[in-house]
Structure formats: structure tokens, C-alpha cells
Length: 156
Image (cartoon, rainbow, N blue to C red):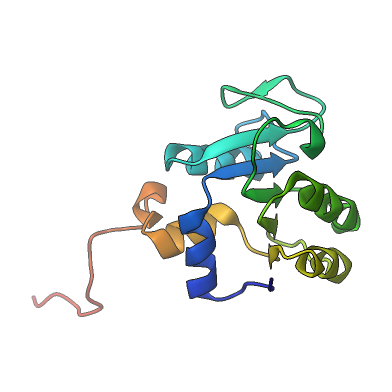
């Protein structure tokens, strides 16, 4: 399909996707992968942890790799190093995922080429949690929404 980097494209992915395999999901609450996955889980998405170091994360069974996940996966959300992305793109294709999502700071033209050639949408260098909050109205969850809509200063 395409590399997605616009609001309409990201909104479309987040609207039609419900199952997110989070590759590299940590069981440590202070890690970005945990925080992002917990947020998405609390907003109605099914999180499928992928990490060979755990048996369970966020109350969900953890799988050692994408191939061993039973059932469908919509998004493969990657918290791994850029050099691991091409192999993860191939795993996402084999699983039948619709989207390869590379988290903040992660870009791989090779992986993007592999995934788009197979018909997947690709998101690079974006956090799924941040994009969901920004586009789908979840900023208040992070304590950012003050309820002030105007930039006008109050009159004394």
C-alpha cells in the first residue's frame, strides 16, 4: 500500500485496526512499550505481547515471535532496533498483518520497501499511543487537556 504519515491515513489505520501485536513489549511499567500498549489496551484495542522473555504482559499471553500468535493481527507495532525491521516486516507479511508500525526513532527504508511491496501500510518514526491521543482525542488521558479551548487571556 503506502507509507502513511498524514492525519487522515493514521486515523484510518487506528479506526479500522483492533488487534495490535507489540513486538518488544516490556513488562516493566516505566518502559515506553508498556505505557503505549497499556494506553491502547485501555482504549479498546486487543494487545498481543511479543517478547520471548515473558509468558504474560498486561494480562495477555506473551508470544516469542509473530508467527506463533494465533488468529489475526492488524498492526505489528515494533519496539526494536532499525536493523531488525526487515525481518519483522517479513514476519508481519507472513502473518497477514495490514500495517507495519515502527515506533519513534525507528526508520528502515528496506523494511518499508518489503512491507509496501506486499501491500502493507507502513508507519515510521511515530508512536501509536501519541498518534491515537492526538488524532482520536485521547490527550486528556495524559493530563494534557485542560478544557481551555481558546488562547485568549482572561480579563482581569
